[in-house]
Image 1 (cartoon, one colour):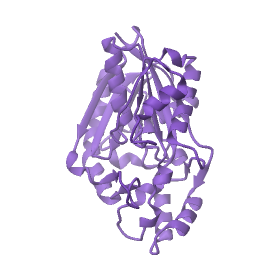
Image 2 (cartoon, helix red, strand yellow):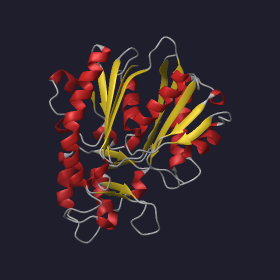
Image 3 (cartoon, one colour):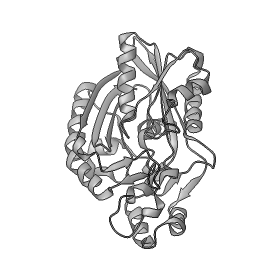
Length: 332
């Protein structure tokens, strides 16, 4: 049995934050030794321009439900017919119950099986593989995968200083947002033709959100320099190897997506030919780092502006804290 992506929906909060606004927040909330000028230069070099912050009182579940509703409306799919809901956001409103169960209630999807999956920014690709396996096995006819990230309230402003620190520069690229993808059984399509994942657990301390009662718990704590060095060690090997495999399977690649952490990610891609470089779709300067939602959000935005079309041969690659990396290939 095959499957296809029936549609993708997304939600971005209306409140856009410029670099100047972000730095002003840092002036009022940051530590006494924060170097605003240095961070301003780094934001410019990183090509960060805008990010979205949720409204006061808005929750991750609110954003997830909005993205899911947009996806179902776009595909004209009745939520009462959903078989399976999988929430894959790395951030969540509650330790329990599962966010997917909250979504089941919000959507009125009373018969859907629902649970959560967590693997940092790789979660959406992991969710796509699980849904692919469920549908191809015949257990479910459809699946809704949803990710929401509200990292703006988890930026550890008070930890910033002018040197290397736990909070790190990476926290300043965080953006709130959500995305949802509906998969359906479809005998005319193969579904996802490839999934590859690699895990390097020895780097698990480089980016953490700790659960606890201390001031820094529930904040995104990043050892930015070490995380970047680790990514530069692993991804330049993984990315070209996976894209070459995807190109061999699909015949070619028309467009490909990657986890958005910088406006110029080419140093993480290794030795790619210029043709593949030009086919990469970048949303970072417009929406920042939306965590696990970045791949489906990029696909939705690309479809809106005509860059992604039905029948396109597509690849997606992610590097995530842990450290892990993943890739998938499919016909859209």
